Every structure is written in structure tokens, then in C-alpha cells.
Length: 378
Image (spheres, rainbow, N blue to C red):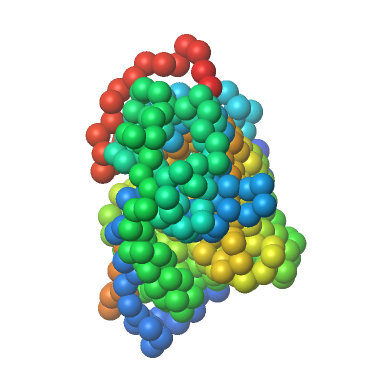
């Protein structure tokens, strides 16, 4: 690991930054066990859930819709990275996989509760079906203003389907909640942020080996906060990571990057997950580039994901979802395989490198190249 850190540090733009970033090693890593786990080792398979960029599972509540989207685009990212509202944040790591620019056509939304609602304002949605509601279309719409579907004005006939059988999605998420609570993967890891009151205060790169790594996080009851940092998760083809968030407090990503690297790990191989049954426990993203990382809040008490000024490729699954100023393509988790017999022999935590990187983008949907970077329109 020391050799890996030196190699990273040698690429940094200046040695002062390298010395400052060296505090990343203060994070405590506790490796748990060494082999196939004795607990339940079932695969987590969610192919129907993976068809949607947003999955909202809660009923309408007071004035709040199950899923609310205001401004910009879903199933597309037609603006350079970072978009205007993200300028001034940390640079993307040099080893980060490039964020795709174009129309993925993969921004479909599922409202799985028969009493759920959607609220869409000034948003361009690119997808195959648009919005699928378990309840009647007439009661699923809370507000639909100045929005488009696949480049034309949003119409309920072409872009909204009611009484869709979404029971498969519901069953997948119920099963995933039960399995992920005890899933241990090929190796377990614990990140301890109790000494920093839950704050993830330095840039980090997590370097995985092949297989699935389950990462539990300790905060001592405080919110887990990433602020003004870059988190890079990298590994070879076949590597996956599940981050299980603490049982108390929110998870906050503020002016940060959470991205996968270009070492071979896929865009659908990293999941941040929580299922805590407490009033606190929201996932809050405020100004971030997210690429190849999904976020699930499966709390039984209407877990929330609230995000604004977010760009990249992700998937949000929660009771209630609120997005403002989003440019997102779909990178959803479809399966987490059962543990194999191979051990993860090395797990490196190294300091990130910031700087430009060549464009390299792959996805399950082809992108249409666009040149719309002269003016950022809503």
C-alpha cells in the first residue's frame, strides 16, 4: 500500500498537495475475516429495478409527491463536466472514468405505490416508457409543467402509464433489503470515522480486487459527511462494492465527487445502501458529480433521497426522491453475486490524483453525441 501511495503522490501537481493529502491514511481500516463467509451468501438480483433511473416506493404525503424533479434532464447529460452550478468544486481524479456526455435514453421513472405521485417541472426526460405508476395515471400526476419526453412536449398518452404491474420491483426491493442487511460478500471491510465526528475530510481512492467487497461505516451516531472531497472507487473487471451506511444519521455529499475509476470496474458495480428505520437517515446530495454509483434508501419509514445540482450517471431508489437541477444518465445495480472462494488479497486506500483524463464511456444504451455546450439551458 505504501508503494501504491508513492506512485499516486508522484503524479500530483505539487508536493505540498501530496503532503496534505497524506492525512488520508488516518482512516482506520479493519479487515474482517478471510474467506467465504459463514452467513447467508445469496446473490442480490434486481433486474426489474435496474430498468429505472428513479424508483420511488412511498405514497403521497401531505404536499410532497413520491418523486419530484425540477429542472434539466433525466436519461441524458448534454452539458460538459462540470456543469455551471458545479464549477468551483474539486476536480475529478485523474484516474476517474470519464463522465459520459450525451443522451442515454434511460431516464425512466417508477412510482411503485398505488397511492404515489410524481411532480415534473421544466425537465426533459429521455427514456423508453417515461413514467410508470402502479396506481391510475389520473391520480399519479401531481404536477406536470413545461416538460418534454424524448424531445417533444410531454403527453400523458406517450410518456405516462398507469396501473402498471410493478409488483416485481417491490418484491425485488423487499428481498434486497433482507439480503443486503446480512450480505458479507467475498470480504468485509469497516471504515471508522468516529474520531472525525463522521466527516470524510480527505480525498480517497479505494482500490478493489475482483469479487464483491461489503464496506460498513462507523460514525459514532453522527451524520456521515463528504464535503469538498473526491472519492474514487476502482478495481478490475468483476469487482463490486456495497457501502452499508450507518444505522443513524444522514449521509451527506456536499461539493464532492463520488466516481468509479478507469481500471475496469463497471458503471453498475457500486452501491451506497441504507435501511435504517429511524426518522433520520436521509441521503442528501448537494452539488456533486456522481458517476457509476447508485444510491438506495430502503428505510421502512419512507427513506428519502434529496439531491440538487447533481451530474453524471447514477440510480436513486427510495421512498421519496426529490431532485433539483439534475443531469443524470442511468447506472443502476442489477445484481450482486454470491461470494466466491477467492479472497480479496489486497485492499488499498490511496490518495487521489486530480487532473484531466481522456474520454472513455460505455453504457448499456448507445449515446448520441451532442454539441450543446455554448449555452446551458434549463
